[in-house]
Image (cartoon, rainbow, N blue to C red; front, side, top):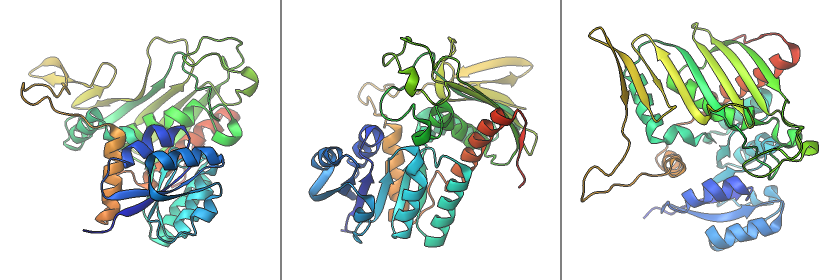
Length: 361
């Protein structure tokens, strides 16, 4: 039997515990051998729960990288450190899964891509929503041409009142932004992937700090501290692609709207449309009549086979490890994640300047 891939985790906080480590633990072909966090206790707790019997803990990721036996590293740190940690890991000869967003700006994301090409190591970004059942179905439908030429789309990432008040989510220095870079990034990635279109022409953006300074605000995780809320509470983008297609991106942690939902897309094409507002709905015209179909993703249609549905993060981890084991290209390509970062950056920049941001490619 081929020896197991040795995986290390850098950053043992919420996303590592909520997504990466539980999903990796289900894969027989790997073992988690090293854990790093600036808070030693977090690394120790993770090692005890997920590590093999010889697992090591670190507070300095550069010490971890001296271990030549490590094959793969998952970077689960705050956004500010994604780029330089990822580059150091790649230069150390290890494959990298970096949590989204790729980086806090396009220049840093570009250096990550260049490092992956230079070292020949695999790099992917944690956009797990591509691996949901509805996402995979809609992607296949788009590839089959069921919607025709898709020329208008919306990327949805709206919460009415769900501002994350833990960790560094509200810290602009550590995160680089708020809901746009946190949840808007998922919706945009999903939409660009459906369109298979990564050539933006120009972007117009609006960024708001309207509710962030409100005291004792209603919120899913309790009131936020206005003095620490240094990122935007809402951001919106109008994106025109080189082929003329239009994408509207909406993102907010706190918006007075009843139309909520995140990591969702709406697509409008010449032959049909689709949205994820109430499950996956496909609409179109046939025999001079309009129709609407809601796709059923329940797995309990047969009495003796209830079926199981994997979590998107489990599918993501499984396919990522397979890419390394069988030398395949990652599903989420760093070139694609770079374009997502470029567009997000352009929305922020357009809001500051009041002008469209043009891409010269």
